[in-house]
Image (cartoon, rainbow, N blue to C red; front, side, top):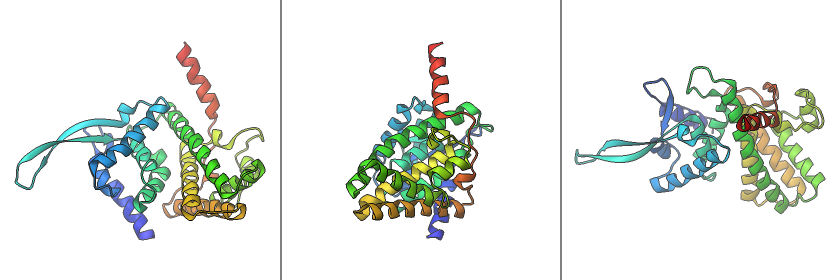
Length: 276
């Protein structure tokens, strides 16, 4: 498994390109092959979902998904013009998050781009506004995926609010090396009333988004039934994500810095700018 993970990381980086302005991008055609999509039209559907996710949080999709045409050589030696899309690292992240999780390479891609979320190099120094945009984008996705996770957990037998709180804590414990919600609050110097997810940077949010999506998939795939089994499944997923972070040399989530501003503060500030 570790060899496959190393191959996945190597492949994603190997197909990365850099344009004349020093900006990194990926070819959607090449990425489709890496992600095991044999039909371009099927991969386009995934790209469209990713673009919609990008637009839903007021991100400028045309900065991350750039339509291009390129010439390819046919077997006969002739050339033909085909459609391609140049993708930013963030666009690749959205694509793998909307890909088919049953594909092992998609699951590996989700881990890869989640852990690498803060390492975008479109420009040399990512300013604070762009980090804020990434936080808002991933937090918005997290809200949607948490709704799905609630429904999936309910189908598994996690029905009462107190039971769901225990279920969520199980995921946190697996991901945060045994720390539960209360202990994470203490570690991050957060007040009891402050939501953990609103006080995470983009990297930590991306890691938790991956945890939530994979927990949902595991519950569905294993047809998990019963509160204890659901809690164990969530813990196992969190623990597996933590292990992957360690193998990739990443920083553990509890050691990532807490941003000065919460998501709500950033959103309020952006709303004021729109009014002015």
